Image (cartoon, rainbow, N blue to C red; front, top):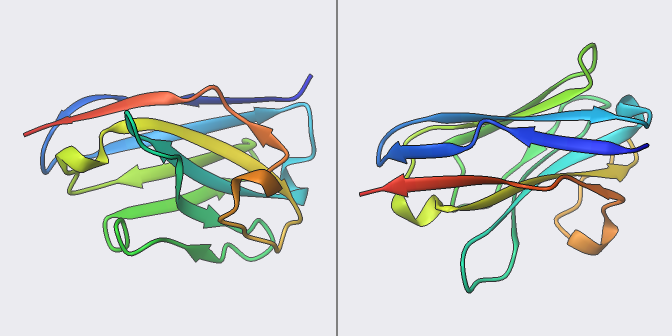
Length: 125
């Protein structure tokens, strides 16, 4: 059974940090690239990062660039999203997702093959 399980969400004050984890099982993790997405109430889901498993290349939108860092640990089949200098507008449910292709990063939701259930991040002002 394919699973992506996020953890690490919670409540944090503005300026604080959180590290999200995404534990994968049931598929060949090293053959996939990993994206992180978020969805705030009343808004569409948006991509916040992507990392290729082949060489660790990353991409971020301007809204999180310089504050968020994504990484993977293939030995643990786990991806991470380190979030620093959090702002109230970062409040959302955060999802990890896997797209086939160790050197292919995508910001398009429909291209992803597997999704986690999401973890809530709330940033208070």
